[in-house]
Image (cartoon, rainbow, N blue to C red; front, side):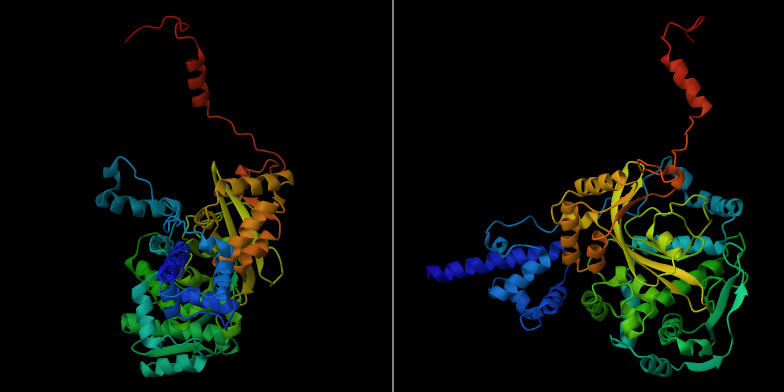
Length: 528
């Protein structure tokens, strides 16, 4: 009897430790099962068997325990130590994307904002379309780029079929009563965001009540045709095909803009069209890459940014989908066009931006991975570990970027990245110490340098735990210090060659000079 109780006790502690580890790393039972099968298909457990192990009803085999230990970067002996770890912790950075409280609060009343915002847009040259995209981005970030209602709508239509072939998408369109028409139109030069002509291609558009017009140019690119058709399916499902949306365009004009969408006024149609474009794009991505099977696919591909090439999904779709399906919540992504415009931004971890899609800044930091890739001709994925300095704030990021071309032939760079600090905290590693080690190494070599051995081993371990292969790839190359503006470069050897002199305002100088005098030195001073 005592040996049986000992076995139950052993099973209980093993199961509890495995369950705590799984939850600490935001994995579902299904995620852990998939990860085990990746390592050893024969020894990989089912979801139900894992559940029984966690509940103390089964004891894992020696081989299965080795697999789980490898996933979470633990020694197998750790599982037999009957001391329980702390429960799963919340690794989200405080106020990642939310604003700080501002006073006096009455200045932010609805009535004053309704008066002030149109004036702000007019005085800063911000179009209604740009403002709409800013609102949508803020909503995305506050929602962590997860919209379950749209996911469910897409899954009800696509039945979670994955991978979905082009014929499958056409079959769904026919089932919904959509009529497909074709047109021939090559790319042409049109005004870009910086008044520099860019190639522009009208890929497709919707005409009420149920007509979809596809450019025959898309026949050469099945991945893009699938996305455009899925996008219009989304319009039919979500909005009844009412036609209130912009054509799908690549190149000089954003697809969320109406043809006359340059007004400085906040036009309700600008906001409607921008939101419709976002909703339908999200639906299309969820239809072609349903959450659970796509999450498993990315796990098998170690989250490579070009993983979609294997199943005719665009790199842009894969990049945008990663934050929505990954068990790790601290993602960001950019879609950058030269000379420095962000067509798409997601800052789920509040990452400061080097430049934006409102105006082109004159002194962006050139050491961001997206800038480096914009100025190369390589089409291979590139991984980078970066220490981001913004004042006294230090952060550690890893990203994978790849240079591509849009449907019109314009070069652009898509970049997906993660904030590494929460992952380090989850493994009881002090991120500040790790960041300081990497930053010191970078400063010793002018701003970029190999990652010290201890920090590199930590990042390699994080790469295995998160199953994001490009973290280990980035750790094997030089890390670099980045910032928002080159004029405020935090490197010990300033990247512009010399540190710009920062002069104090004259008013501050006068104030400091007066305060530095003895209190009784001011002749003729009197009490008032």
